[in-house]
Image (cartoon, rainbow over all chains, first blue to last red; front, side, top):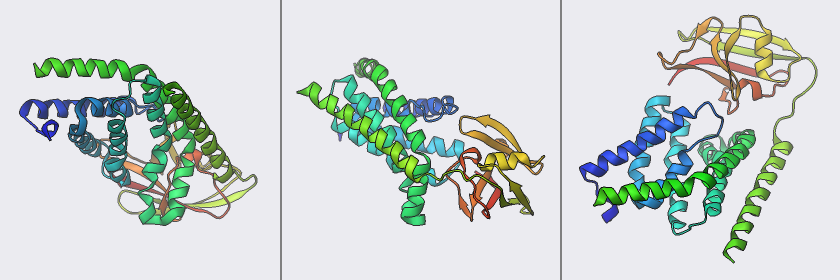
Length: 169
Length: 130
Protein backbone atom coordinates (compact mmCIF):
# COMPACT_ATOMS: atom_id res chain seq x y z
CA UNK A 1 0.00 0.00 0.00
CA UNK A 2 3.04 2.25 0.08
CA UNK A 3 2.35 3.42 -3.48
CA UNK A 4 -1.22 4.28 -2.56
CA UNK A 5 -0.32 6.75 0.23
CA UNK A 6 -1.46 10.21 -0.76
CA UNK A 7 0.60 13.20 0.40
CA UNK A 8 0.07 16.76 -0.82
CA UNK A 9 2.65 16.43 -3.59
CA UNK A 10 1.09 13.27 -4.95
CA UNK A 11 -2.41 14.71 -4.60
CA UNK A 12 -1.43 17.65 -6.81
CA UNK A 13 0.47 15.44 -9.24
CA UNK A 14 -2.37 12.96 -9.69
CA UNK A 15 -4.90 15.78 -10.09
CA UNK A 16 -2.65 17.29 -12.76
CA UNK A 17 -2.22 13.98 -14.56
CA UNK A 18 -5.99 13.46 -14.47
CA UNK A 19 -6.47 16.94 -15.91
CA UNK A 20 -3.99 16.13 -18.70
CA UNK A 21 -6.13 13.10 -19.60
CA UNK A 22 -9.22 15.30 -19.81
CA UNK A 23 -7.41 18.03 -21.75
CA UNK A 24 -6.16 15.54 -24.33
CA UNK A 25 -9.57 13.89 -24.55
CA UNK A 26 -11.28 17.22 -25.21
CA UNK A 27 -8.56 18.40 -27.61
CA UNK A 28 -8.88 15.21 -29.69
CA UNK A 29 -12.68 14.91 -29.42
CA UNK A 30 -13.15 16.00 -33.04
CA UNK A 31 -11.20 12.96 -34.25
CA UNK A 32 -13.54 9.96 -34.08
CA UNK A 33 -12.10 7.33 -31.75
CA UNK A 34 -8.57 8.67 -31.95
CA UNK A 35 -7.46 9.33 -28.39
CA UNK A 36 -4.40 9.40 -26.17
CA UNK A 37 -6.24 8.40 -22.97
CA UNK A 38 -5.53 4.69 -23.48
CA UNK A 39 -1.83 5.41 -23.96
CA UNK A 40 -1.60 7.56 -20.83
CA UNK A 41 -3.63 5.17 -18.68
CA UNK A 42 -1.15 2.41 -19.57
CA UNK A 43 1.84 4.69 -18.93
CA UNK A 44 0.42 5.98 -15.62
CA UNK A 45 -0.31 2.41 -14.51
CA UNK A 46 3.18 1.05 -15.14
CA UNK A 47 4.77 4.09 -13.45
CA UNK A 48 2.41 4.63 -10.50
CA UNK A 49 0.85 1.19 -10.02
CA UNK A 50 -2.40 1.11 -8.04
CA UNK A 51 -2.28 4.86 -7.47
CA UNK A 52 -3.56 5.20 -11.04
CA UNK A 53 -6.99 4.78 -9.42
CA UNK A 54 -6.74 8.36 -8.11
CA UNK A 55 -5.96 9.67 -11.59
CA UNK A 56 -8.86 7.73 -13.09
CA UNK A 57 -11.22 9.13 -10.44
CA UNK A 58 -10.14 12.69 -11.31
CA UNK A 59 -10.58 11.91 -15.01
CA UNK A 60 -14.09 10.46 -14.67
CA UNK A 61 -15.32 13.25 -12.38
CA UNK A 62 -13.97 15.98 -14.69
CA UNK A 63 -15.44 14.26 -17.75
CA UNK A 64 -18.80 14.11 -16.01
CA UNK A 65 -18.61 17.82 -15.16
CA UNK A 66 -17.86 18.67 -18.79
CA UNK A 67 -20.16 16.31 -20.66
CA UNK A 68 -22.83 15.65 -18.04
CA UNK A 69 -23.94 12.40 -16.45
CA UNK A 70 -25.14 9.60 -18.72
CA UNK A 71 -24.91 5.87 -19.13
CA UNK A 72 -21.39 6.36 -20.47
CA UNK A 73 -20.32 7.50 -16.97
CA UNK A 74 -21.14 4.05 -15.61
CA UNK A 75 -19.03 2.45 -18.35
CA UNK A 76 -16.17 4.87 -17.68
CA UNK A 77 -16.13 3.61 -14.09
CA UNK A 78 -14.88 0.22 -15.28
CA UNK A 79 -13.48 0.42 -18.85
CA UNK A 80 -10.37 2.37 -17.88
CA UNK A 81 -9.93 0.20 -14.80
CA UNK A 82 -9.94 -2.87 -17.08
CA UNK A 83 -7.13 -1.34 -19.15
CA UNK A 84 -5.21 -0.38 -15.99
CA UNK A 85 -5.45 -3.92 -14.61
CA UNK A 86 -4.25 -5.38 -17.91
CA UNK A 87 -1.38 -2.87 -18.11
CA UNK A 88 -0.39 -3.64 -14.53
CA UNK A 89 -0.34 -7.37 -15.20
CA UNK A 90 1.96 -6.74 -18.19
CA UNK A 91 4.08 -4.00 -16.55
CA UNK A 92 7.35 -5.93 -17.06
CA UNK A 93 6.79 -6.15 -20.80
CA UNK A 94 9.32 -4.01 -22.68
CA UNK A 95 8.19 -4.67 -26.25
CA UNK A 96 6.57 -1.67 -27.91
CA UNK A 97 4.76 -4.09 -30.22
CA UNK A 98 3.33 -5.80 -27.14
CA UNK A 99 1.99 -2.51 -25.73
CA UNK A 100 0.61 -1.61 -29.15
CA UNK A 101 -1.21 -4.95 -29.27
CA UNK A 102 -2.67 -4.37 -25.79
CA UNK A 103 -3.79 -0.85 -26.67
CA UNK A 104 -5.21 -1.96 -30.03
CA UNK A 105 -7.09 -4.83 -28.40
CA UNK A 106 -8.56 -2.45 -25.85
CA UNK A 107 -9.68 -0.12 -28.67
CA UNK A 108 -11.30 -3.03 -30.46
CA UNK A 109 -13.13 -4.15 -27.31
CA UNK A 110 -14.03 -0.62 -26.20
CA UNK A 111 -17.50 -0.57 -27.78
CA UNK A 112 -18.42 -3.96 -26.36
CA UNK A 113 -17.16 -2.97 -22.90
CA UNK A 114 -19.12 0.30 -22.97
CA UNK A 115 -22.26 -1.43 -24.28
CA UNK A 116 -22.26 -3.77 -21.26
CA UNK A 117 -24.14 -1.08 -19.30
CA UNK A 118 -27.14 -1.69 -21.57
CA UNK A 119 -27.43 -5.36 -20.55
CA UNK A 120 -29.36 -4.70 -17.32
CA UNK A 121 -31.39 -1.89 -18.99
CA UNK A 122 -32.42 -3.40 -22.33
CA UNK A 123 -31.09 -6.95 -22.24
CA UNK A 124 -28.87 -8.64 -24.81
CA UNK A 125 -30.71 -7.06 -27.77
CA UNK A 126 -29.91 -3.51 -26.67
CA UNK A 127 -26.32 -4.51 -25.89
CA UNK A 128 -25.90 -6.14 -29.31
CA UNK A 129 -27.54 -3.29 -31.28
CA UNK A 130 -25.35 -0.71 -29.53
CA UNK A 131 -22.19 -2.76 -29.93
CA UNK A 132 -22.72 -3.72 -33.59
CA UNK A 133 -23.57 -0.12 -34.57
CA UNK A 134 -20.18 1.00 -33.25
CA UNK A 135 -17.98 -1.75 -34.70
CA UNK A 136 -16.48 0.37 -37.53
CA UNK A 137 -15.50 2.95 -34.91
CA UNK A 138 -14.04 0.20 -32.70
CA UNK A 139 -11.85 -0.94 -35.60
CA UNK A 140 -10.73 2.65 -36.14
CA UNK A 141 -10.09 2.91 -32.39
CA UNK A 142 -8.01 -0.29 -32.59
CA UNK A 143 -5.83 1.01 -35.43
CA UNK A 144 -5.30 4.45 -33.90
CA UNK A 145 -4.56 3.02 -30.44
CA UNK A 146 -2.10 0.55 -31.97
CA UNK A 147 -0.19 3.24 -33.88
CA UNK A 148 -0.16 5.72 -30.96
CA UNK A 149 1.07 3.13 -28.46
CA UNK A 150 3.64 1.68 -30.88
CA UNK A 151 5.34 5.03 -31.31
CA UNK A 152 4.65 6.84 -28.01
CA UNK A 153 4.37 4.30 -25.19
CA UNK A 154 8.12 3.73 -24.68
CA UNK A 155 9.17 7.44 -24.80
CA UNK A 156 6.26 8.51 -22.55
CA UNK A 157 7.09 5.75 -20.05
CA UNK A 158 10.79 6.67 -19.99
CA UNK A 159 9.99 10.36 -19.55
CA UNK A 160 7.49 9.88 -16.74
CA UNK A 161 9.72 7.37 -14.93
CA UNK A 162 12.64 9.81 -15.09
CA UNK A 163 10.52 12.72 -13.85
CA UNK A 164 9.06 10.55 -11.09
CA UNK A 165 12.55 9.48 -9.96
CA UNK A 166 13.76 13.11 -9.97
CA UNK A 167 10.72 14.18 -7.95
CA UNK A 168 11.37 11.43 -5.40
CA UNK A 169 14.99 12.57 -4.82
CA UNK B 1 9.93 -17.39 -28.56
CA UNK B 2 9.00 -13.94 -27.28
CA UNK B 3 8.78 -12.57 -30.80
CA UNK B 4 6.68 -15.54 -31.86
CA UNK B 5 4.20 -14.80 -29.05
CA UNK B 6 4.00 -11.16 -30.06
CA UNK B 7 3.46 -12.04 -33.71
CA UNK B 8 0.75 -14.49 -32.67
CA UNK B 9 -0.84 -11.70 -30.61
CA UNK B 10 -0.69 -9.35 -33.58
CA UNK B 11 -2.23 -11.99 -35.86
CA UNK B 12 -5.00 -12.60 -33.30
CA UNK B 13 -5.73 -8.87 -33.16
CA UNK B 14 -5.97 -8.61 -36.96
CA UNK B 15 -8.22 -11.69 -37.12
CA UNK B 16 -10.44 -10.28 -34.34
CA UNK B 17 -10.80 -6.99 -36.26
CA UNK B 18 -11.73 -8.86 -39.46
CA UNK B 19 -14.27 -11.02 -37.59
CA UNK B 20 -15.85 -7.93 -36.04
CA UNK B 21 -16.19 -6.29 -39.46
CA UNK B 22 -17.86 -9.48 -40.72
CA UNK B 23 -20.26 -9.35 -37.76
CA UNK B 24 -20.99 -5.72 -38.62
CA UNK B 25 -21.63 -6.49 -42.29
CA UNK B 26 -23.91 -9.38 -41.33
CA UNK B 27 -25.93 -7.83 -38.53
CA UNK B 28 -25.89 -4.05 -39.06
CA UNK B 29 -29.18 -2.72 -40.45
CA UNK B 30 -29.10 -2.49 -44.25
CA UNK B 31 -30.48 0.54 -46.09
CA UNK B 32 -33.88 -0.11 -47.65
CA UNK B 33 -34.57 1.37 -51.08
CA UNK B 34 -37.91 2.94 -51.96
CA UNK B 35 -40.45 5.33 -50.50
CA UNK B 36 -40.90 5.36 -46.72
CA UNK B 37 -43.06 7.23 -44.27
CA UNK B 38 -41.60 7.99 -40.86
CA UNK B 39 -42.96 10.03 -37.98
CA UNK B 40 -40.79 12.43 -36.01
CA UNK B 41 -42.07 13.81 -32.72
CA UNK B 42 -40.22 16.94 -31.62
CA UNK B 43 -40.18 17.78 -27.93
CA UNK B 44 -39.01 21.33 -27.30
CA UNK B 45 -37.32 22.65 -24.17
CA UNK B 46 -40.66 23.92 -22.82
CA UNK B 47 -42.07 20.38 -23.32
CA UNK B 48 -44.33 21.49 -26.18
CA UNK B 49 -44.46 18.89 -28.92
CA UNK B 50 -44.87 18.85 -32.66
CA UNK B 51 -45.30 15.83 -34.88
CA UNK B 52 -43.91 15.79 -38.40
CA UNK B 53 -44.63 13.05 -40.92
CA UNK B 54 -41.87 12.61 -43.49
CA UNK B 55 -42.32 10.84 -46.81
CA UNK B 56 -38.90 10.13 -48.20
CA UNK B 57 -36.79 7.91 -50.38
CA UNK B 58 -33.75 8.62 -48.20
CA UNK B 59 -32.02 5.66 -46.61
CA UNK B 60 -30.73 7.42 -43.51
CA UNK B 61 -32.46 9.57 -40.92
CA UNK B 62 -30.08 12.51 -41.43
CA UNK B 63 -30.97 12.80 -45.14
CA UNK B 64 -34.69 12.43 -44.43
CA UNK B 65 -34.57 15.24 -41.84
CA UNK B 66 -32.56 17.52 -44.15
CA UNK B 67 -35.13 17.09 -46.93
CA UNK B 68 -37.75 18.88 -44.83
CA UNK B 69 -36.82 22.54 -45.16
CA UNK B 70 -36.18 24.32 -41.87
CA UNK B 71 -36.63 21.20 -39.75
CA UNK B 72 -33.04 20.58 -38.65
CA UNK B 73 -29.64 22.16 -39.03
CA UNK B 74 -26.28 21.67 -37.40
CA UNK B 75 -22.64 20.98 -37.90
CA UNK B 76 -21.08 18.35 -40.10
CA UNK B 77 -18.71 16.34 -37.94
CA UNK B 78 -16.83 13.08 -37.98
CA UNK B 79 -20.05 11.14 -37.31
CA UNK B 80 -22.10 13.12 -39.85
CA UNK B 81 -24.67 15.75 -38.96
CA UNK B 82 -24.53 16.91 -35.35
CA UNK B 83 -28.01 18.38 -34.85
CA UNK B 84 -27.93 21.81 -33.25
CA UNK B 85 -31.29 23.28 -34.25
CA UNK B 86 -34.65 21.56 -34.57
CA UNK B 87 -37.84 23.37 -35.57
CA UNK B 88 -36.20 26.73 -34.80
CA UNK B 89 -34.91 25.85 -31.32
CA UNK B 90 -31.14 25.67 -30.91
CA UNK B 91 -29.26 23.59 -28.37
CA UNK B 92 -26.23 25.28 -26.85
CA UNK B 93 -23.21 24.45 -24.74
CA UNK B 94 -23.96 27.50 -22.56
CA UNK B 95 -27.37 26.06 -21.62
CA UNK B 96 -25.90 22.53 -21.57
CA UNK B 97 -28.63 21.34 -23.91
CA UNK B 98 -28.55 18.85 -26.78
CA UNK B 99 -30.94 17.17 -29.16
CA UNK B 100 -31.47 13.53 -28.27
CA UNK B 101 -32.60 11.16 -31.05
CA UNK B 102 -34.85 8.26 -30.10
CA UNK B 103 -36.54 5.45 -32.01
CA UNK B 104 -39.61 3.89 -30.43
CA UNK B 105 -38.70 5.72 -27.23
CA UNK B 106 -35.16 4.34 -26.98
CA UNK B 107 -32.13 6.60 -27.34
CA UNK B 108 -30.19 5.73 -30.47
CA UNK B 109 -26.53 4.72 -30.23
CA UNK B 110 -25.95 6.10 -33.73
CA UNK B 111 -25.91 9.57 -35.29
CA UNK B 112 -28.71 10.72 -37.61
CA UNK B 113 -26.52 10.13 -40.65
CA UNK B 114 -25.68 6.56 -39.70
CA UNK B 115 -29.23 5.60 -38.67
CA UNK B 116 -30.90 3.46 -41.31
CA UNK B 117 -34.64 4.14 -41.59
CA UNK B 118 -37.51 1.84 -42.48
CA UNK B 119 -41.13 2.49 -43.40
CA UNK B 120 -43.45 3.21 -40.48
CA UNK B 121 -40.79 3.96 -37.87
CA UNK B 122 -41.37 6.51 -35.11
CA UNK B 123 -38.52 8.82 -34.17
CA UNK B 124 -38.20 11.43 -31.49
CA UNK B 125 -36.08 14.58 -31.25
CA UNK B 126 -36.04 15.92 -27.70
CA UNK B 127 -34.13 18.86 -26.28
CA UNK B 128 -32.42 17.56 -23.17
CA UNK B 129 -30.08 19.05 -20.58
CA UNK B 130 -26.80 17.42 -19.60
